[in-house]
Image (cartoon, rainbow, N blue to C red; front, side, top):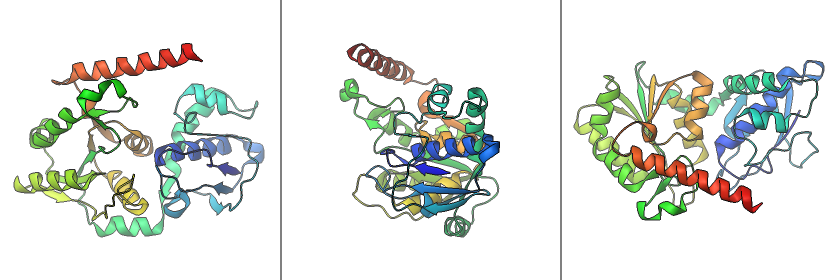
Length: 290
């Protein structure tokens, strides 16, 4: 099966949606089921690494395509959202039922595995059995309150919310769990170090990957991102600032308990409702323009 990721310009989670969609098609295409995936992908600003360098697919051999080949499925950053509408839109086979395809698409996440080098790096962290994860998605999902009108993403957290989360991290953890072993993940070096220090000062057992941060659009490398991703899979609970594609993927792979703090009923619930309303109005405006 040919998997063309050339039009996926966004992050890793969108690539994962495209790949799992192909896995689902392959699983249901009983007459022409393939044991080999020929994947064409390029590094982009939003995803400066390749799936094939750090991940595997269970029971499927992956071969890298250096040149694009014609594929019956054309996926991009805008038609990979995990829903029935996109399952219907992207289904190239009349013989495959759309509802079955959507169901299989969600199940296919379980076939995504880390490469050997990622597994070895995760094992070196030596995490305990009982562990919770703190996932702080900030760099491209944080917006200043005064710029609210410019909101682009449904999963956005405002600067005042993030500051409250940081300063009240101990209280927030205690409200949701009694586990003292915590794995910290963030796309911001400053915020990651701040949270680690707060937790260590309160005698929590803190675990983390020694990520190397840069000043590029994506501050962490592909390897560090995937180490954090597959370590979060081992956590009993994940407390996330925003419910982005990473936590959705983890839930589909392992059915972990995930708390999206941005969606919880708290002092900022009015901001959340207003944000969702603004996103809806933007979609309505775009619909009438086109």
